[in-house]
Length: 275
Image (cartoon, rainbow, N blue to C red; front, side):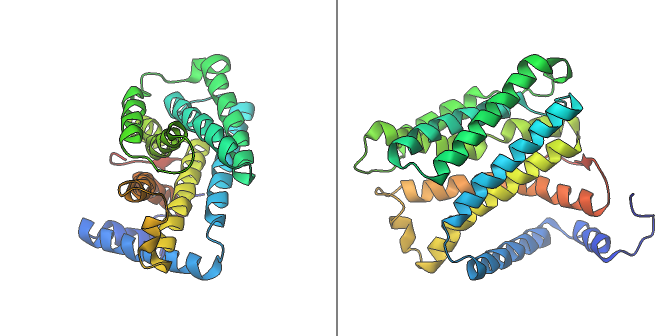
């Protein structure tokens, strides 16, 4: 049930106050919230590598939400097939690299998420294709794939492993940072996002924030020196940090409308302006 008109609920009043602020004030508030959240995470999480595990686990949970929707609701409306295909590509590449470099919990989580993503692709393409709105899913995925490949060839980490593995690793990092763009384009075209798709995209936003938080906190703790530990070569450390930050900011606007809709008691997330 939504809140009645004229309600003085503090949370809704806070959202109304934020909406009336200028973009400059909103940006300042966003930075304050970001810094506060990072400081809280830094204080309570001692092993910063847990951020990556949490990020991958939340992504897997987001995929499970989609599986629940496809299985019980028998519809794939609002889902971008192209985003799922990009996700499958970078997960397959990352799984290949991870299996060759280190077989750990990250490899297991990537494997589970990849299998789940392939199942979602199969359902959209074949079982539920009648509910797939292809006209709204009009993002051309060859651009992020080609762009990520070119960046990976130019900027990649240096290590004792083969250069081909390092290029593939850089490719999946870059592609992951933009893999959500087709889904955001579809939602922008539809101007409205149904609940299960909204939960999935919000999970991606939280996952990417945790991944970005890892790098930022490490840099803060080492007073910037960690940038030179992340990989040999001058351009790779800033590149991987930028890739994490790009996807976080891409999803930040949607996450704002998602939280606002939940607080307003709405089932659908309405996007009054382009994401």
